[in-house]
Each structure stands twice: as structure tokens, then as C-alpha cells.
Image (cartoon, rainbow, N blue to C red; front, side, top):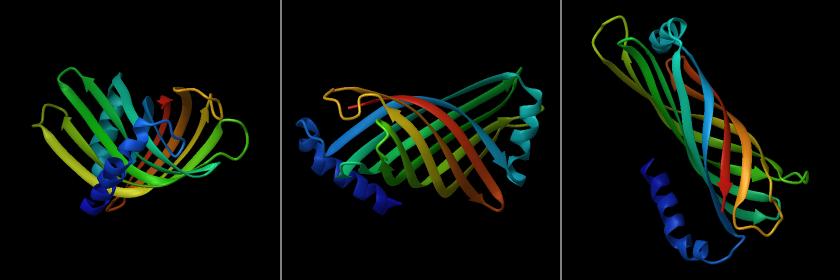
Length: 192
């Protein structure tokens, strides 16, 4: 993991002069998201039981990508996204913070700004629980898996400094010991 972070830092450091100029070799985006996680497995039973008893929930997240152009319709895609899941009922709560680093390819198949990406991802989910008056529980788990996205870039192939994007992704991450996370998200972003 340290090697991957060092490589990402090096790419960003050496490409920063290119970002300052007008270039179609590099671009980046940042956005907000919402979604729904589906947790399966033994260690997720507390979270699942809590879900059945609560109506108070906030799901919010962020997403950010760096794109490196390898062809007119293909890009290397590096990024990070997160999803914050806050659930509460009176003094009980079951909060999760899920963040993922990913890398792969983004392809524009020739249908205007419609594009898709396929990426390898690795990340962590941290859970903060207090259920039925028990003491606070903290648990976290790392995992790696795949992320598939479909999005539309409204100003694709147009000369614009800011390009609005809407999209969605499905992320599948096995966490080990037969624990699996499936996450569906929708997002809006601005591409620079």
C-alpha cells in the first residue's frame, strides 16, 4: 500500500506543472455522492439488526478522480471515493465510514459523453456501534475488489473549463472471513 501511495504522490507531484497549463493529457474531477451499502457476513450482523430498527439515516459521500489520457477515447483513471453512513435511534447508533482507493481505465465508446470505467479498488470500512445500551464498539476491515461506473460528461469534446458529470457506480469488496460489501452510489461532479 505504501508503494501505491508513493507512486500516486509522484504522479501528482511531477504532473502539477501540466495541471497549471491548458492540457488535455491530464484532467480531474471532484463530486458528491449518495448511495446504499449492502453488508453480508457474520461480522455485519449487528449492523443488519440495527438497520431493521431505525428510520434515522443519512448517506453522503465524496468522489474524486485523476485522468491520464492514453488515447482519444481511453484514460487511466485513479481516484478515491468515500461513503458515510450514519444511523441512529435515541441513544443507539451504527455509523460507518467507507473509503476506497482505485485505479483502472475509463472508456468513451463513441456515444457522446457517455463513458464507463472498470477499476481495481482497495479500501477500509470502519464501524462505530452502540446498540441496546452496550458499550461502544469499534471495528474496521480492509479489503480489495472491483468498481464499475457508468457516467455522462455533459461537455465532452467541448471547449469548457468546467464540465458537469452525473453518474453511478457499483463497488464489490470482499473483506475476508466471508464478509462482503456491495455498494451502489449515484454522484454529481465537476470535471476540470
